[in-house]
Image (cartoon, rainbow, N blue to C red; front, side, top):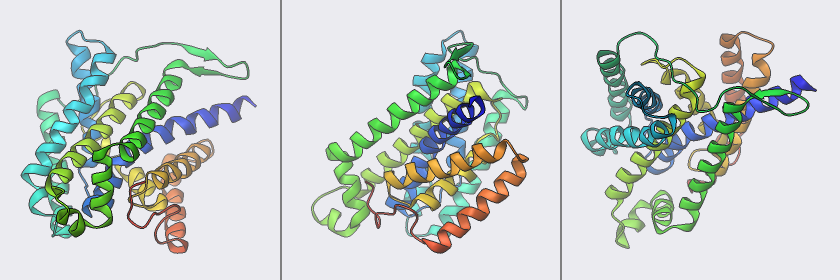
Length: 287
């Protein structure tokens, strides 16, 4: 029973992180038709923002607020300098974002050095759940990730900006015809997705060593999430995160991480073969 509860909570932790990281890719695929290979670096920027805040005596909570802002600024700069010129050139956009990811990694190395950086969690110890003891910070992470995803759903479904995003995804030409500034929607949505990835980086930073290359592994899993769940769908994002995060957490107890990644990739390929649009694709509507 204890092992089952621990595995479930580990899965929820990974599902929360993957959902936040995958959100930006869902926006890129569904809204802009751009494969952003620099998305993992937004997570890295968020993690370094927390480390930087703590290194100057700030609290983790201040870093948690700073992280999405820092990642959103980097995302806005990337969109304005590079991507806005390449929306009609998807192959060029892939190469450009790959180059941008290397530039961001090297910039972080120059500023912070090669060594890993520690981040202290805001809470210590473990919670007694009667059937198992589980780290308190991981419970907190699950709650924050769930709240963040809930707020994203409200933004997409209940606000005028969310309506603009869904309209542009479904029919960009018609959106422009009714007066929606699609360029502005692209820029804000891209920066928003980067900010959410930065929040994910802040949440995961106390669980790992902060390194310039830490976002690469999360990027691969986030792509699995979007492909399996269905691009352009928040429900698909959650379904894909649940499937990939749950499968990874279960297999990690039995196999090496490299073998787990290979099996997850194989399963993702099989699902896409059976359902090319993903588990819960909404045919291009961010819902």
